[in-house]
Image 1 (cartoon, rainbow, N blue to C red):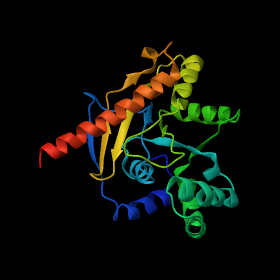
Image 2 (image 1 turned 90 degrees about the vertical axis):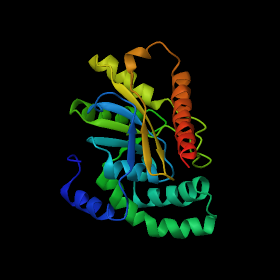
Image 3 (image 1 turned 180 degrees about the vertical axis):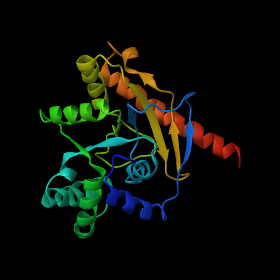
Image 4 (image 1 turned 30 degrees about the horizontal axis):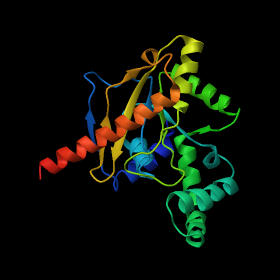
Length: 233
């Protein structure tokens, strides 16, 4: 992607030697929009890594602010939340892995130019930074799943932050963004991309209910995909 700095693009070229390009199943009848909101599941770290390496549009990720802070803040997040709570690795080993991983991920997150997200009034900064990217014609990839108890193949909950971005951008600029719902299947290294939903068609609907419908649709795409795989065996 052109909106990454040259050295980081070089590093990604090296990583691609070990990470295969995913198969993409796109349910849209037209090319993906350059300026849109894309939703995806995490699938651990596999989803973000796959999109960073191979997503065909210029974009910025939304990511938790802890991983955009100081080295100490990043270590705390990795040791006490990511590896321990989400990956379910025991506390002692989580701290060891975090110590090794923090310097590497510090550079990787810096290269990805993550837009930090917050659960308080600082979220305004996230929205403002997102506006800048969207106005450049870039997209925003958001991982809305609730991963507080780990990452699940069948998603349990989506947060509605993506609706806040779409709504506030519409109010500010009068532009209705397309929202694409994606699901990354790690086992088959496949990205499923549902037909886009235009924000203007969601105006007036309960945002949590909309988030729930996107989550349900992501699960439905995944289950249908698995059924097709099984039927071919």
